[in-house]
Length: 280
Image 1 (cartoon, rainbow, N blue to C red):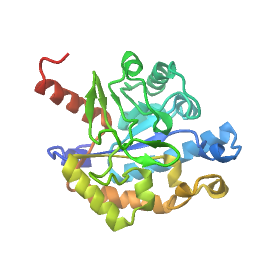
Image 2: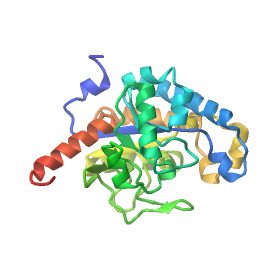
Image 3: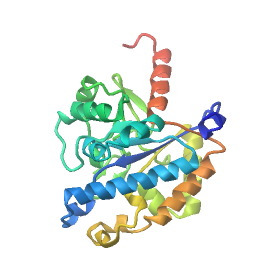
Image 4: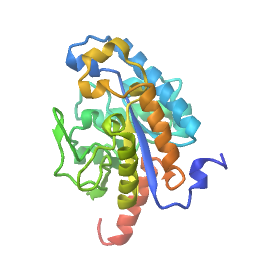
């Protein structure tokens, strides 16, 4: 792929990481729906194909935080997906987590994708156990969203930018300086387009990178299931969200290089080690 966007922008300092949480479509079940597991997996797989078509058309690489259960459902596709994009862990299953799932999800994803798995993101962006992540062989975590999301978490006390937590790179979801406007799916769905574009540009210039994420199922028309989802998720999905994402990527590509999280965090850890050579 000598003429890919990654190659054309190889020398650029500014970087953008786009990721998708590849998971069972279980959100409506939190609000009273009873979607059978097979249907959850089918919707998740359809969304994944939509997301892959979109990023292939844009000629960028992305990071796919994937549950082991979802990866097993699309097992025939996993090696070819991993040959192009980064596979990272989103746990074993999206609706339940145990400490053993750190290691189990990594092992199962590596077996299914035939590729190393070095990153983790907790379902629902809940706190993680750093020693357990390290002992399971992870190099980075991207579970922190340093904003207040009513009903989920209030992380406004957390740092906005990457840091070392022992030997683990912590890579928060991007949010704007000062006001901490959200730059994950919530911002893509609800911020007016001019404000979204300005916020993305200013955050990229300020931080030198963007860490953006969505869910593949958000690119679909969820139809009858919408009434079982909170209002904040009912607006702005499907074709509208896909169109916004395409325009955002095309707007950022001339000035920043799209990269996987493993590449970014490897560079970050190496730079940190060079700055502090005495640190173990």
